[in-house]
Image 1: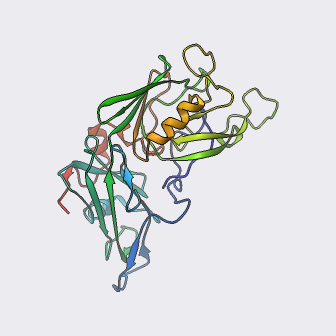
Image 2: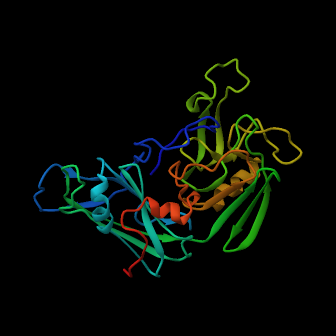
Length: 312
């Protein structure tokens, strides 16, 4: 699972660093040792997300992090040994972000109710750099209700839908002109009831005398990007909406009651789509913003191309 900066960051990096996807708690890659004797140093998977047994949103990719770089010449073989199966046929493909992260996402969002399995049989598979797999990894998870949040920066609204029906439209404030919010679709990384947020941690200001300095613990935090974008309540902007001139440092602000409600509605992998900001779309590896790449762009980063899931 991705671990990112704990702050609203307008000036943070737009990409996750090489170790951003390291699990903060128990490793999410589960494995059974193989008796096969490796031909060289082992090639291991650091994490596989989602974790086994979880229910996730329709925009959630399968994200695999390798402990060591995988050479370009070996990626097609590695992809073919990471078999994705589903309870109904789904078109999708792998895409490499650098040489240690590979994500599989469907061409369009997952259908709700789909049961998904990834079998990563790495036994004897080379990473092209002298390492060989010694384990198999299996994860199973379920796609839950189709919950989406559509944020209009200029309209100061967030429309929340569930399975195609509008549930509520909430008042929001997004980033200021100086610290605009990312545009695009970001799948929820995780959520926490409280997060300690500091301006220093995302490079905004470490000067306590600066008007942009903050050091706060804030509630009902839904995490969208590695660079520090959250949907949450802010004590500095308690009544967001079109009547408020306040802007955030890149986060999306909700009122206390709305933030608590939204927190209870969303899960990992639910898409939050932001439009109307002057900022570009978040980089696709800035968290799980995979759907910010068009399908042709996605396939350009795949070694084996588009495929259809098998049946478990």
